[in-house]
Picture (cartoon, rainbow, N blue to C red):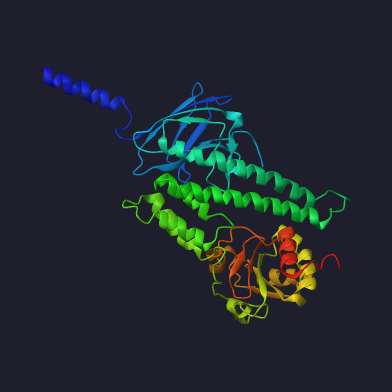
Length: 402
């Protein structure tokens, strides 16, 4: 009888606790949040799948779950206010692993919106999160990276103001735009160095693999740097989901990183004749692959600048190959005629389903890749004032004589 009573007591205790070995997330949110829905999703390998949901009561909510390996989760607070803008839900992203008892406090109005974290890998630093050693490591990394991000954003805001001075106002001297871009490049170089050092000076783990992928996604990352990141995880015996994901993505990213040789694809010109990309590379000239589409406003806004630099620098050996991500040939041809694009025009008319676009990680347009005379990728950032600065470095300043 005594034995049965003890067993019954233990069973009740287990049922009243969260799942054994799993994690628990308890949040306390201040602000106008009563009755607001909160969703739990994965943020490391994003999907639309909702893992769980709950409602905030008296400013509090709780989630429980299990994680075979540490995962980066997203707590999404549903925005109930009418809006015509996308991704307006507020978010807290965090790492959780089995046996974590995570506690969160946060002011709702200070949380980042999904649009603010659209590029992935970030979180709302206004939230205080405790109870997860994995998340502590992530925050150690992210707080410093965020300092670099904010500095680049300040320069970029200035660059946008330079490009768009306002109605009836002339754009400032070309040197202003180039200096802003050079300043962004300096900070980006520091950010990349920090990312590389952070990964290489910490023990491989699932959290570090997530951070390593952030490093491998940097626009200026080169093939040798990606090799160093991959090699850091080579001796890891038990590779979890995020480590395997990093190794797979890093190997894929390497083929389109600075320092890689041009990949060969076959596209058609405006008359339907097939051409290999390699036919335009390795002939002693710098070649720009410019990705655009007829429906892309920013792309078409850039075309007058492309006409200018082509007219000035083509005689010096600078070639442009525009690669359209259209899927409608008539619209593509109409835009070429309207924009007076007199250089090489190619497409496979598959838009973002193009294998070329996928392999070169073209996720937004306009995008410009510069290849050197030997066919090696020099930079993935060859637009606007960045292009002006690069052309001056390569060939001298022809703008002043224009």
